[in-house]
Length: 150
Image 1 (spheres, rainbow, N blue to C red):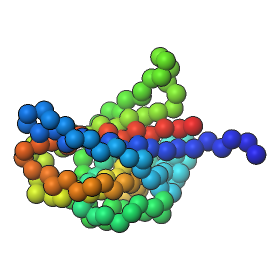
Image 2: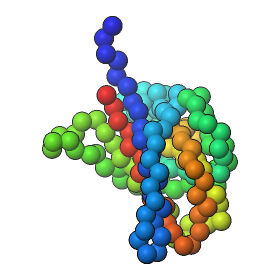
Image 3: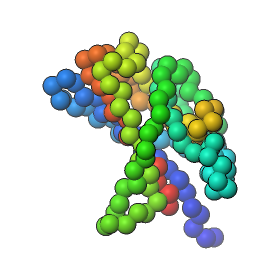
Image 4: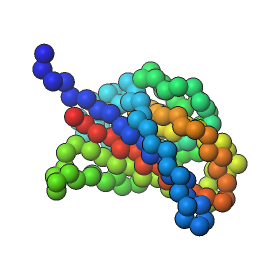
C-alpha cells in the first residue's frame, strides 16, 4: 500500500499576564470531516471554504472527526493572514494561524474549546478542548494553530 497523505494539527494556547509571565498548553487537535470537504472545494478555487475564523467556547466534550460545531461557542474572530513555517529554508506543507485574545476580549468565560472555521462561517475544520482558562482582563490568550500536511 502506498503512503497516504495526511493532515494533522497542533494547538498551542499561551496565557500571558500583564507582567509577561506565561503558561503554555500544547496538544494535537482533531481534524474534522469538514476539513476534507473544504480542501476539495479550495483546490477548485472556491474561496468560501478557506480557513477564516477561529472560535472559542466553554464546552468540554471530547472532539471527534464528526464534530460540526463547538459545544458552546462564546467568541469568534478572524484568523488574519496565516504564515507558512520554513524548515531548512523550505516550505514543507505547514500553515500557522495566530489569534490573540487581548486583555479586553471574552472576559468572564471559562474557555475550554477552540475551533477553526471556513469563511462560509459554518463549516468546522478542526476542534480541540483544553483545560479551563477563565479569561479575565488580567491576561491575554494567544492561540497558535498549526496544520501540517504529510
